[in-house]
Length: 152
Image 1 (cartoon, rainbow, N blue to C red):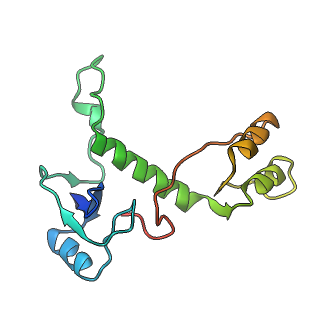
Image 2: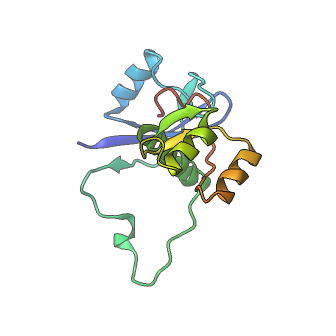
Image 3: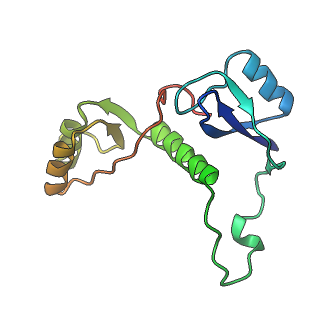
């Protein structure tokens, strides 16, 4: 199934991507209040001018059209933002939110006192340093505001 990819922006000028079945699908979701900014949760969203782009499953990878040995171009801010949003979605969908108990739960997992699984939460800089000193790998990743809701 082909998806239309629209460049969107909220009233606070946060730029992001939205994938929809059609322009009519976008309009219907917008009218029902289902489209919102993934950064600030603003529902005042508008389409921005963009070149047509379709996401077709089974298409060629982006590097397929490049000559061998040609380095990829530097990503645009919009591409970086889209990548960040995909990473945030992946993290949210594949980890358990343990909130402020992050350091405690990470230790339990590391010392095999709790089942091994991906977790996310909040730790102070000192807690993160202590975990790293214990050999517990910690990655800091800023999640968008309103990330408990569907990310567009």
